[in-house]
Length: 275
Image 1 (spheres, rainbow, N blue to C red):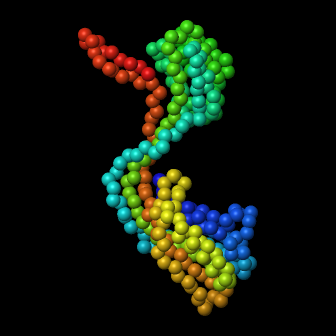
Image 2 (image 1 turned 180 degrees about the horizontal axis):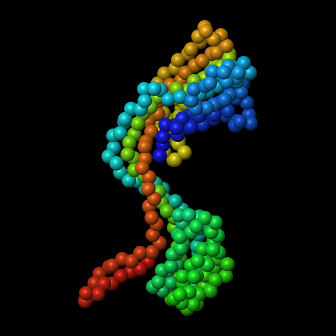
Image 3 (image 1 turned 180 degrees about the vertical axis):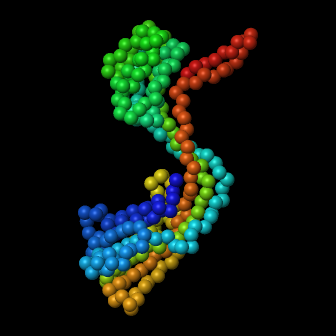
């Protein structure tokens, strides 16, 4: 779920991209080295940076706090399905696993009317997955294994599948908060170049992406220039942007490889289909 810290981190990332369009190996748009960080600067460190020609860009939340903007009833949602990285292919009497396995992934085989499922663990390779399934199958019928390929001689029905745990989320709240992006510089022309580039980039960003895959609505609020006489070497400009972002509740949705469905009854006997 997105938190205030996630928003600040995302704003720092957006500022980094705006001020270093060629990446950190290239020059900044203002011609001076730039430090970007969350929080308020420590005065002695800032003075040392200004004396050395560094620009500081800081991100700090306004003390007005968040404003609750929740307007939808809670509803669990399922994002785009996650494709398992463990794959399997099958012929009439054999299955072969490939790819990579890991926690949250399932491998299963339906042979005749019996199902065998293995929950993958950290470090599992396709051959490990095959070996674990063979140990289950061997209790019921003849089976052979060669590396990641399982062969079941004489099998009449064979299905193999893989699946992975899916994440679902519930938006329990939305909030809007104002964040202050401050440029601290020792030269007004450097300050202007840095903050113009930053403001232009943020103004063109309507939705701010967060690490958890959600986004926040980004809106310009205010710009303030502060050139105070008590510090002749400090030229400062503040950009105030609001971000509306969600608070999510997440859960894991269990995967199912095979299921049994009752499709009717005949003389009090259930007719079922397993797949």
